[in-house]
Amino acid sequence: MRLCSPLLLCLATAALSTAFLISPPHMWTKLILTHHWPSTFCSMEHPACHPNISYWTLHGLWPDKGIDCNSSWHFNSSQIEDLLLDMKKSWPDLRNPLSAAFWKYEWNKHGTCAAKAASLNSQHKYFSKALELYHKLDLDSILKKFDITPSEKYYTFSQIEGVIENFYGVTPKIQCAHSSKNADVQILGQIEICFSPDFTLLDCEKQFTMKSIPKGDGDNPMAVDKASGFSVCDHDMPVYYPPLP
Ligand SMILES: *[C@@H]1O[C@H](CO)[C@@H](O)[C@H](O)[C@H]1NC(C)=O
Ligand SMILES: *[C@@H]1O[C@H](CO)[C@@H](O)[C@H](O)[C@H]1NC(C)=O
Ligand SMILES: *[C@@H]1O[C@H](CO)[C@@H](O)[C@H](O)[C@H]1NC(C)=O
Image (cartoon, rainbow, N blue to C red):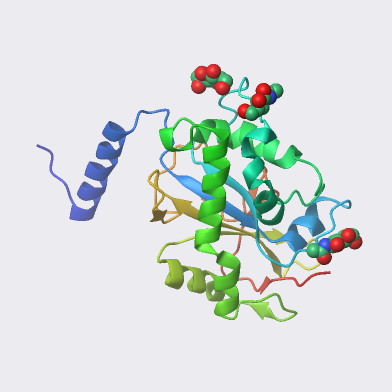
């Protein structure tokens, strides 16, 4: 027996060791459904990107652990043929709307790792589950419903976070682009909402993630997410939610 004090720390330790017992060490424990705002994505990423889409689109469904887990499992769009219409609308490649390259990239990098779970162990299961979760959340409508709409006026960070927390009952991870022209403003770019392996909503930040975080960046809210070019929004800085350019 070990003395545990304070009590909460003791419980957390117990919960953590239970989690390790249940899932093998290499298995992911959380899924991150990532939405991006096309205007922001295009403004920072690519001149060839024309964002005439004014709703939040899917960026990906990412397990919290693992990248490029099976290089011999090739993307094959004929396995998701029945999903393609929805994919084009909900998960468009903003740089190249006619290409499947974005889906292939997401499958190789994240889908092959998600597929370690039986519930996601085919391309059809993976992509259809991502679409299902995206439609179920319906983030775009929820933001509109609670008056968070693209606008020339600025929001506070807590206005945006508050709507999501109140509606879904979990903490999202909200990422911004930081303007080089105006250091006093950040631009809303990406919203991540997290799920447990059985697809129930989960707080994004509270869980222990096994993801290796570059040394020194772990506690820095301004650390740049190199994969996407976004970083976690600053809670004290006004947020610009850009309308279509
Ligand atoms: C987006 O722009 C392209 C090219 O300007 C146009 O062909 C297409 O119809 C537009 N799509 C929508 C949804 O407005
Ligand atoms: C990788 O994918 C191939 C092709 O689908 C499959 O046969 C193989 O079992 C997978 N390997 C692992 C380790 O999952
Ligand atoms: C892609 O999937 C289809 C349908 O399952 C299959 O017939 C085809 O052989 C696959 N193509 C490749 C290159 O694996």
